[in-house]
Image 1 (cartoon, helix red, strand yellow):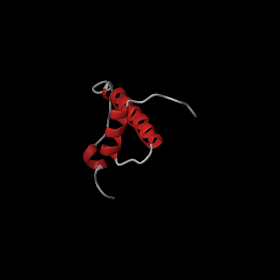
Image 2 (cartoon, one colour):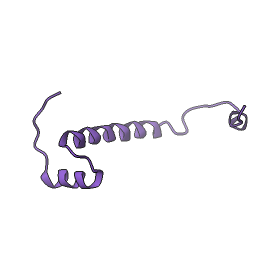
Image 3 (cartoon, one colour):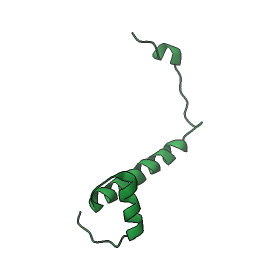
Image 4 (cartoon, one colour):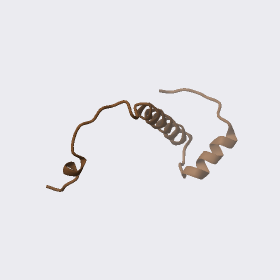
Amino acid sequence: MRTNIVIDDKLMDLAFKLTGLKTKKEVVEEGLKTLISISKQIKLKSLRGKLHWEGNIDKMRTDK
């Protein structure tokens, strides 16, 4: 998708320094991927203690 956006120069410079990425496109795409990943983690954390699991974890951990 092509779009034009105004991005804070200081934020972009810091993103370049911290990530080592070379282009604005790379920085924006990495930022979007990170935002999506964090959002998925938050949703998963909301399920903590709400799911029922049955099984034998010790048996599952054996290498057979």
